[in-house]
Image (cartoon, rainbow over all chains, first blue to last red; front, side):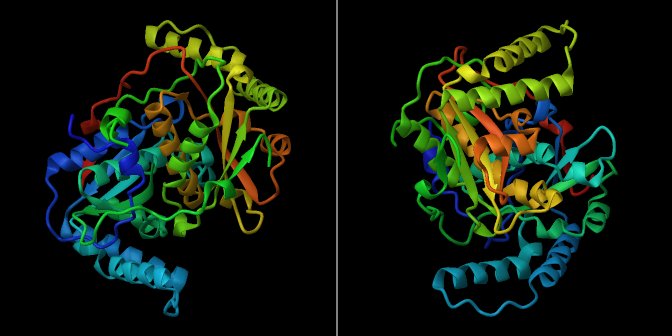
Length: 204
Length: 204
């Protein structure tokens, strides 16, 4: 694709986009997102990521309800933020919580295991390394295609219920839900602390 | 950067590069890798990834020895592969195992926690989602800059010893080691099963 965005241009302007228009997303773009995700590495090249693309209104409402319940349990009713950046973030989170069912597509990233994993294994370091790189590819691809997205784990916090809603067998574990659609806001750079605060040379 | 590679061009040609030349990598490129990694999302925007960039020969030998020991424990002496693709992979793995200390840079991706995490928490779904997207950004940035890389977890399998080698405090956990340098082989596309085998619509 001669006219595609540059890799660093995308990476440095891949803000979490929570406010999404209800407009439908063409199926070929959704397939393109999964293709991009599928290029990421998996442990021992297992290629065991699995993707549920949810557009059904009833399914999305169930997932949005799970998200609302998990947020209530985790955070209750937080006091209004006084810091402007935090207040913006809080408002975007509230929109996301109230309107998740209106986002046109929910993509759920899963891993399929040969046998039903022990809980600690399913949540383990090695397995996370097989799904989260693919999620990042998907987020970058969405940005490059003009789609807004954000990785969320709260809708899956009640794992047995989430698995039941999605019809997942014992040996398939969901890791995150990514609402996808055309963003209401503008893409832009993310803000990060200076890298000298996060890098050490040779040892801690 | 007007002349940077396109996002999809990089993603679809980001093969795991295990055979690496001993040539040093300029420090500004290493910093560029961390900057790219640092753009990835973290849970609740914690920005708690930490990066140890190891160039010291003695440190690299200790990590290479840990990798050799972990591979011996995990795989023993595997029978030679008969499938050509598997045989190539096996040969690359053997090179990687034998020569890890010669790769000019080992980058270790870590997360810093406010308090020392319980083991299950440190290895949990939520925490993996704060470090592996950054690792994927780093791999893509390396590819875009002409550097070879591959994410590995075996050198960190003996976590107490790995943490001791790296001097990591209780509340900093290592997730993967990425050997980085100029590749001996050529970049190229990865091979993946068709996406219709990994996608379901609305439910499993």
